Image (cartoon, rainbow, N blue to C red):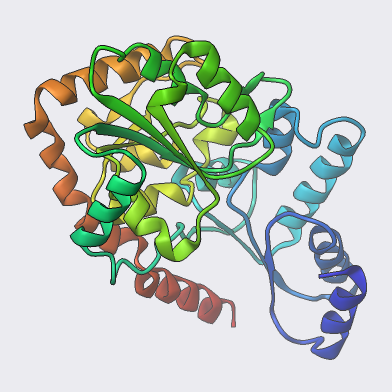
Length: 319
């Protein structure tokens, strides 16, 4: 929405409770302003530590950073409640004096209509028959400060698994996709990885079911520690074996077999740990059976009927 559209909405219902999605312009400026000078109440819904994410990734850094910090602080402190995606984000904001913080996690899409036959046809079309598939889904955005792009660790792990019938699958699009393609060539794994690019959301369940192991890597810093990420519920609902860094919500929800240590912002040794765990899973396929518990856990925590009731309860409590 433009600033003009925001102002029109704000003026049309001056008594209503405003729900602001994301710490972004112009909402993160106009909502605190109207709260301070007009008494307008609002809820801020945010899934990230936005200032820290911009500062540490280098994306959106520069002269904008002080303003981003100011807008995020103002929006959090003026909100009647802040909705976050992760337990550790809630703990962080409460420790900073934010008066009310509620965890309402990301959900997952409809799993109906994805048949084993659909998955088998897709597997064959992508050339993944008879292969153990290590996959990742996410925004392939290049971080200029860190010098990496989401999916870099999958490619590096593949380079250490050339003696096994392991293939990579990368789902997602972004300005780092070409960097990943070049990196795959440098590592000698270009013929062992499928770049699916951006796919329709309705097709996500079928693509995820191609993965024997789905990767969910968060950096071990503040931006990573406060996140759940939308991919975790999707992986769980699809019944995938998830290989996650021991960071953020994944560290609280997943069994030990699915977790790997990750040090700092860029852990250059992490891909080797991934390769070692994948090698074990290839050799002992029965260990993959722990994934069968994932759909039930997903329905308990991430089903939209559960999340919507949490939201209803929050809004009702605010009057």
